[in-house]
Length: 403
Image (cartoon, rainbow, N blue to C red; front, side, top):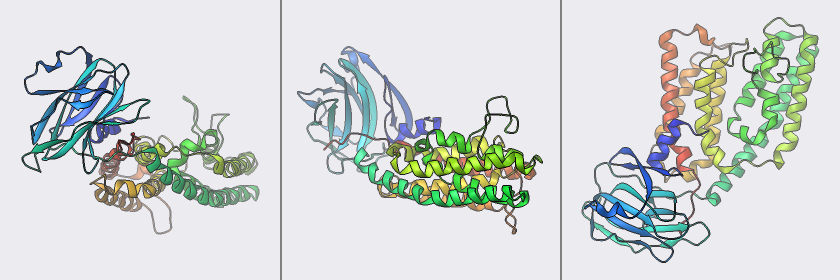
């Protein structure tokens, strides 16, 4: 699900598809609507730019650095995507998606001196490069629109494979942890079972970006109770949270044992099937942001607590999962996301703060034991980190190569 944060980030680092396109101009999000007809050229300072298979980007010339206003008109008989691109670096400063036949879109971009060109990308045709336009004036201008080199499917496939290999390498450990939990329950040692439940659950929570590839297995392993029910009272619930509810409600071992056995079987099924699954490349960028957004919404509100009061431990595991989701994207982000170092620092600061609530014996302070100020501090730090992660999904949104 695309969140508001990702939408805002997409406005800064790209454009959203549909009849409304969102661009960044003078540091402010601007929404521009497509419209039919040719009246767009009435604005005296606007360049009317043609987007067509027969010729792309004509109508823009003799430009000076600063804000450019474009009325981009698709004169072809089919929809297309249009970029404004730096000729040498290939960075894209404007991305108009789904520009319909016969429609015109007005957009503003603020650029410094350099050489630029429009690129037209018809759905079933090769990209068409327009003439190179030399923009004169200052190289650095105030509130410049950020440019980004488009990320293609081919860029993301190696990252997806690397991440999938890491997930696959962790599944045997997850299964061993679940087996230890099951053995504890079978032996009637519920104290040890609680400790091993947490170990196994945190291992699973660190695999956050792979949930999309786990399919129904995620529901079986880590599902939540149905709306209006508790984990203890939902007869159809299985997995970690059902076992958690039983372990912390005084249920006898024989009642828990079948669910622990089923958990091992479900994880074994996942481990067997996962090598044949496919992690969608775009999911990694999305989940790098969504892992912590979910943590803020569900863990730091206590909504997922079924009795163990280990939400802060789960957030710590989610931070580990965020780091692992980012790792295969670093080669892509290094040259595209100037705030990557700040993002790393925010994740580290979040982890340090959350882990300050872990006792020397390894136990975690219950969320409800934090003071109001402490909870506000944790929420604010996680929220700051989420804001920095949000652009990654927009940057890693797959775009067509213009070359």
